[in-house]
Length: 258
Length: 311
Image 1 (cartoon, each protein chain N blue to C red):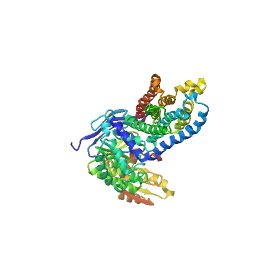
Image 2: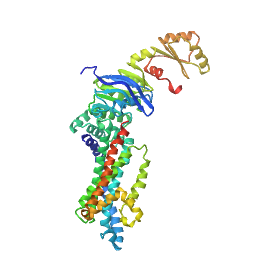
Image 3: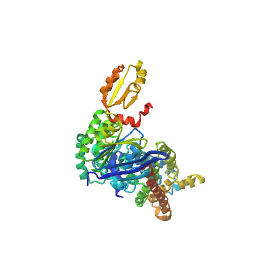
Image 4: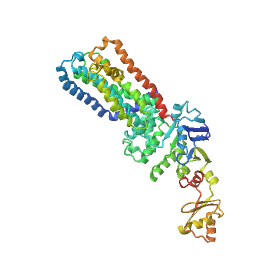
């Protein structure tokens, strides 16, 4: 645990150099998204009645889903190129390896940093969506840990996989054929009831859908009425994160200790 | 602690990657305070050996003890007492010189205050004090190497491992690095280094092994190796290309410890170069140029590992 913290602190030092620019994109991104989609598109949607959205304005429906989906994006951003680059480009892992840190410490320390980034971004997002008046309930505070768990459910397994790569091409596949379809078809922009029945089970199986369902339920304040369902979503994401963390200890060792 | 305390002991040490054997059963002992060199061509198994000593690569066979500990079980404890200068720099070029040392010191769990003090001393030692606040990116290759050396000393290591410390540096930068390493040696720091520069090995190492195909071809001090594997002097003769081949045929059986024919010259390994040259001339051969020099580690190296590219 101490060794993990040492690896984490290294990332903090690196982050101190770039946090200003990264904070701006964390703030401007949500404003653009919520402004354009929530207000722009939302005003169109709201005119046609929002019964299928559960009777809430489009902005209230959309914002928590974007929260979950941007937690996924942060998780993927932090667990792909930075992990690969730590072996191939700036060689942070290789340098760290000559210290007392073990491969598993290097992994967990980096994952802790990823979690911090996801948390920060999600927190900023929740503040901004609150400024837009999107949350319907104070339970929105619980959407924060839910978003973090969503990001982690992606970051932990993807980092475990990224460290094994010999070139960075597969990342493009992840972003184009993984992240974007997930964003589009996980009940983010429209309720799953709009999808053909045969497609719905596929969406239920994706991790992002569970994250969206959690964040939305807490932002709308409906989550408390369905504790079993909420626990189910949490369990799904937690299992994914746990499997990732277990696998990462193994893949990092295989890659770094040869 | 006695001067002859053994810090690293290897017995029949083996490293395999799949069916490829990189290190094929080597034995050696490293004692406190000495500078021990691994010489060998690329692919001889030097870096694999360094990685095993650095506890970032598990041995495939044989026995290895470092600082009295087992590198497989006690990796973190051993690495806490090692300094490593890897073949490729692993500095974070986005950070400043000072921050690189800070990050590294934190890996070792050193308190900030101690890191700050050591950073000042180390940067002065490697002559980078005036660049402390600069980013690493624009530094020259030699400066980066020196910074890597400073970084490897942040934990005040018992053993400093250097994998080809001056490869890729220009002559000036190499001499500065050598000078610094020599000072470390004088301070009693135990050094293990790999190199394929003979002058580096000759200047820095008390004891050497010549490694080839994963095994030791020879070991000893630079002087011992030269005495054992090379004649005291070497006579280099160059002839007119027109008569080169014919002359060389006739000189091949000339009384010398050993003769080596290269594309452009012939090398005679002899006791006394000047008298041999006189004898060559007496026989009526007039070389275009001749050079009498002392046998060097490079002669030893080439004899033991072959002039592979010309084979």
